[in-house]
Amino acid sequence: MDSARIEIYTTSWCPYCERARALLRSKGAAFEDISIEADPMLREVMIRRSGRRSVPQIFIDGAHIGGSDELYALDVAGGLDPLLRTSRAPQSASS
Image (cartoon, rainbow, N blue to C red):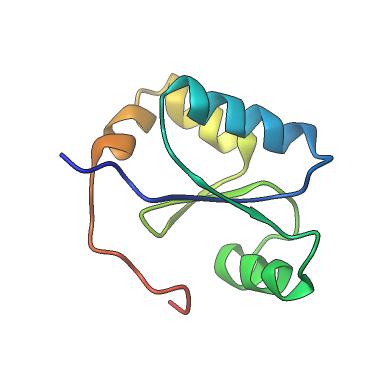
């Protein structure tokens, strides 16, 4: 089974970003780390996609999960592992 596509919008100095990365790494999940520091347009894309200005913002197979707290809550509830193993049709960044 294919693994999920994971995107995480981050900054280098954010402890919540590192916390989210650490959880995903502990699950063996590959993810795309999108730094919004170098490119202001990436921040705008993140805000448009998530409706939020804070980092991290996490997407799994195009679905907005939320930030670090939501990712950990999803894991505690038993919902993260099934998402990491699921493969869905890719969604465009403009959706």
